[in-house]
Length: 444
Image 1 (cartoon, rainbow, N blue to C red):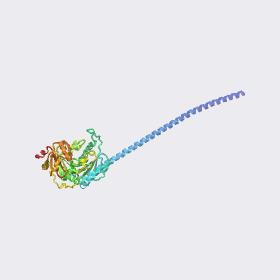
Image 2 (cartoon, helix red, strand yellow):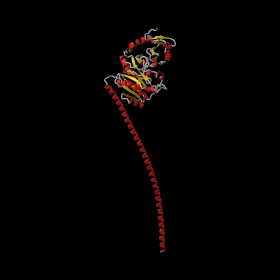
Image 3 (cartoon, helix red, strand yellow):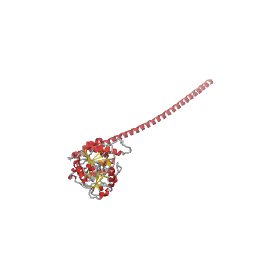
Image 4 (cartoon, one colour):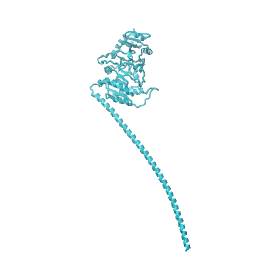
């Protein structure tokens, strides 16, 4: 019996040991699984965090894409509105012109770029004299570029039509150091004149710049000159400007001249001339290009003695060149001349040479040194002969007039003769070496 009891206890001990071993293995296995589970949970949490971060980045990018798309739509809408505005303004302008029974004498275009204050002054000066005759001289402003102040200034006026030249083509200058502005200006002029002659179908155009005041008889002058321009094909253009129009060199507001030198600065040309010039228009320096003999081909320009425009633009593309000496002292005509009552037929080619020759012939010749003093001491008109360009420049310097030549022609000259007043109504004629022969005047 005792032996059986001992065996039973041994079996219990063995069973207890086995149980304890199994529990220890189970605990170890559970601990391993717990560690793996914790690692899996941690990995899952990290993955979830990364997914959320990626989702946030995607959402942010989607937000930016949506914002950019909205910005594009907004800009497209603005462009559409601007296009509609331009078309509406053009329709209104054409409707205004159609509604008028009177055929326009000429379109008037103010060439502008980035000087809003200058433009406003010019527009006000033009409208002061243009309003009563707006149907005969419809007004346009042509802006080169997108300066917002210039655009806003132009659109503030219902009495004019606005045109905008947007040119994004890069400019390649022909020589190092040249100002790009002169190339941009030439492009703008061509575009504006093409628009007015070929799109709007005007027969004549008057070109002003955005830094000009005009005289009270500006439009009457051009209306009278339009007849000359149509009748006489030897007249290339009509200008309101005299390069030697400073106060001390002018006297008679009724006097007009023919000139071989293109004056510019407020001028009118006909469509027939533009048909010739437009296809070969220069890349830059268009005004000096017009002064070349190969382009004006012996044709001449009508100019007044007293200017009908005043250039107040001290600051601009020319950087104020010559302003203080030559532009600021210009005399702007203040006499309301009745041009309709005047017979201007003396300016026609078949009459003018004789008319001018008779005037020069009556002038007293002056020779030798001290010509300024000699001219001052003579009553009546005086003529002084120069030998060549250098001699002309020396005499012109003494009087204070423009010395510049272009392609062999002095500023304002007709057949080599430059005429200006000297302190009184006395006229000074500077006579070229071939001038008397061209005017059929025998030398005394």
